[in-house]
Image (cartoon, rainbow, N blue to C red):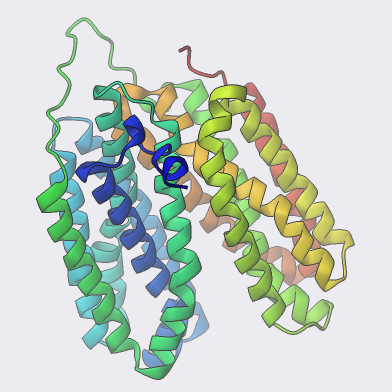
Length: 395
């Protein structure tokens, strides 16, 4: 068992830096899982905002996060130390959740989310970019360890939401947000003490600094991820309501489905690092997208609890593979813009989430929740076409 665990680490042995990277990813994941699932409940019950303002709150926070994280990614590729940027992101998280703990004014919280919480979201892509740069400079393989890092975030989401609801309902939102702020303080201490400072790679004066937005393969890959995660978010939003209103099942079924999918994702992510070297990232991601399309077709035709649970295997393959290999696929295509492409990967997923929320509501309003899954299946096919046209980077 020890040999198996160590095989996921660069050099087949954990060290101070890789251990702190794992710790940081897990803590960032669990801090997000502590707050995101209960945020709408907090804004509704504690702040007293009506549904329209809740929607505006999440839209502003997500769009702001996309813009701020892309700017931070640009800074990180132009000489500003990634360690310092990660520290700033986590300090902003601590300050933001301190404000959330003691303030109940909607407009103050909206501004806080747009500035502080949105900046915090840039922490994860910068940690992944730093990890890839550390491994590349030490000439150690990165695929396996990247999948372990990504699995830490999923593990945080398996553990975090149940604890979050327990604390929020049992002790209150003030205690929940104070705990989240404390986690970010711990993160800052760990990052300051253990993360290395990486000197920027000197640029070749004759090298053409091609814009990220002019790279056809990067744009096609981004489109694929936008469509994949738009379809996924439409499913996540619509499934609980579809189960209760259309199929008249208990709402707990949706929780079982999502928990099962998260549980399946983790071993799939861990296996991806080994199989990517054998089969290639692009073929594996195309197979996973096909699994996603089959999953939505299964949701359309299935009506039984056991069927819904079994279908989560396909969902786990879809999300597990694309989440595990997506970061390194983006990085392989543009290794000299590590911060920007890693952030672009994250922002493609966020953009898909924004569009998924808008589409799911509109489609369900006019055609019903069942129709949402037809559109999700169609979107995965568009993602498959975009992925098929991406050319892998030459080794």
